[in-house]
Amino acid sequence: MATRFFFDPPRRPKSKPGPNLKSLLVRCPSTSKLTDTGRTIEANLWPMAKLKTQKVTCAHCGGVHTWTKKDVILGRYQ
Ligand SMILES: [Zn+2]
Image 1: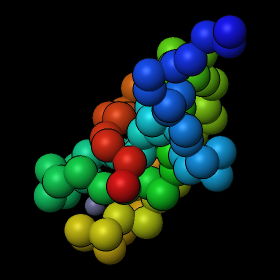
Image 2: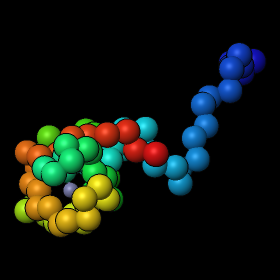
Image 3: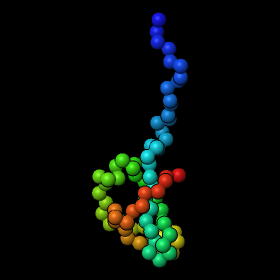
Image 4: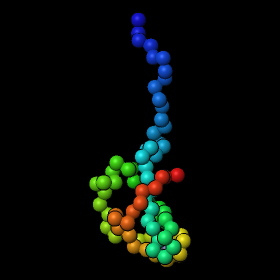
């Protein structure tokens, strides 16, 4: 007789982003608020990620800020 499972295996739609997807946030030098760069990355890939200097139009002060990897704060993706 075949082994029966008591529980259904968990099912996850493959179209969903990974559970470890993070938003890349940088701190605005003018307002000290966190600005979403609009970029995302899997948290487990972040330590190996290489980034050139990037630019972001700030939602808080309206200016354009340059940022590199060391400026990034990983935030929860939503
Ligand atoms: Zn700003």
